[in-house]
Image: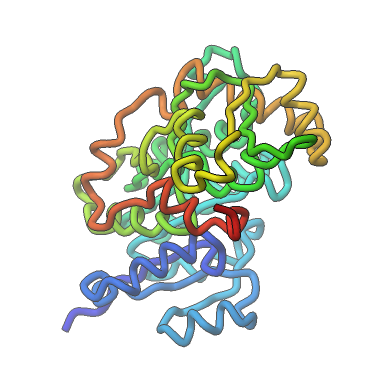
Length: 318
């Protein structure tokens, strides 16, 4: 029997890394082909111990310290790597993290690097929207990986469904009607994605279709939904609470004001506004089709209706 290929997963105990591990382990054929090595900051924590009980090798590593993750790449065949811009809101830090991963992948002879990327908004818009750092930093790493000729596939997560219930879509005083308020028109197409449930479905598809997706982008989203679609999905699922549910287009100032009230600094307010404007004017994925990306899946991605049905923010309402 051939030895299993080592598949390194960053953020093993997190939402997306955890989804990847779950999808691999529950597929007997894929689980028989790959041994998972999960990178986490603290392998002694209960979540890491639970993974070890399922046969995952958990190793300590800090993405900010290249030397601390170097040994995790030893003998690795494939690597799933992601970074979290919002943890420090520092684009240069995120780029350095990504470059460290890319360098180690090249040095270690990794045969398939799966990088969680996004589009370069500043480049696409000719500088019209120069401050969408959490997109551009990941795109910069993608370009670095391509320039280094590292065998890679780029997974581009859509707009997280988890941002919607109780957050972007919430009850607004004084009447407490459920309201989705955004600084873009109602017909703006939004590629929605269940990061916790579906990251693994797409990454497993990439892993098992290597030759088909090498050097390509995979758009990880269930479908394009408009803001009106989002509200109508809620109305269908929760007809009583949804009687007065609505979408409202708000101004840039109103949107930034709401983010300020939520505690976000000016830099993040402007970044998120430009992100919304980019999505309407150019398309989150540059208006790309999702058909080819779905072709590698052997499990259906989560619909918005299914996600809403399980959302804690909507529990107990009809």
